[in-house]
Image (cartoon, rainbow, N blue to C red; front, side, top):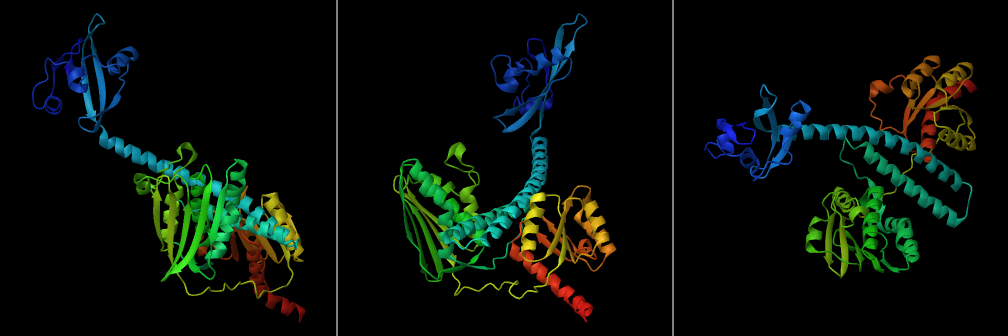
Length: 475
């Protein structure tokens, strides 16, 4: 449209007449009425900013009539005396290009989030490695049942944290998880109750309210699944129940077996939910807690239950509390997990450990030295290479990510010095190595955080490889 200084339309093209004038000419009408349906000039009209700046200032507006976005531009026409004689007004539909830009921006954000989360996961794995290591060392120093139970709860919580970290690492490469663990439901629920006790017992009493627990947990109810995921799901449900009872109430948990299903019901006497809330409770980012909630809790619970081939049902009434009913396929009996470390080679080794984190070196050194191995450590890969040239070592344990050189490159150089040295690679990153990465460099890979049982098992496997050589030497 070509408009005069009084915003009257002097000329309009066919597209303007069809879109804005419904096929009729727009000449004589005001541009702000034709374009925006305003009775007076638009406050955000781009004409003034364009004239003042000397450059064309575009303005993007959403048009309710078409449910589309339009980019408006004004090109002023200045007379010889420097006055505005007229201006050209264009409006371009930018909805499609805007959607493409938003998708592109979203992909970039997801990519950046994946990189950030990967780095955070690596750092957390290093921290959890030390937590698990120190807890397991402390368990060896006490026979007190209370301390042993407390350390076991810390260990389980740390392992659950490690499971969370693995989910972060799998952010951009989700896959189907195989459920191979046989879980005693009563034991699992009792662990969750201990983990959540500070919330439903201690914290509630501090606030001056009472949440009374009522538990009916039957023995010998087994399901197949992932105990870390289920602990997370049950913890979310209990926390929601506690939040729903701001003035106190009764929290009851009941397990049973009906036909071929294991049943577990979580019931509270809290505020309850409306039908609308029940319908949306499993929606991602839906929350009734305002800024106190992130809305991921119950949607995450739903995903975990579905991955376990289970069913979840919500029964609730405003003012009468809520019951979360879970159903899982039962398995006939628990399958004893055979620890690979039960039959282990118990020889002693000369071990060199390289990691740029001092506290990880100290934890590994304390554990391996306690087992009787000779252990030397270093945070410098360069110095480690120099030491390995001078002395013989049966095993070298190296971190993957270190300043100046990667664990893979370091392993290659060490193998070049002595191919008989057994190389164990440890890492807090999500390792995705193929055969070419490991060939002639790495003998074993251990992901952080690791248990000492895992370290012991790997050393046992190393011993089996080194045993023939040692027997030949002794003969």
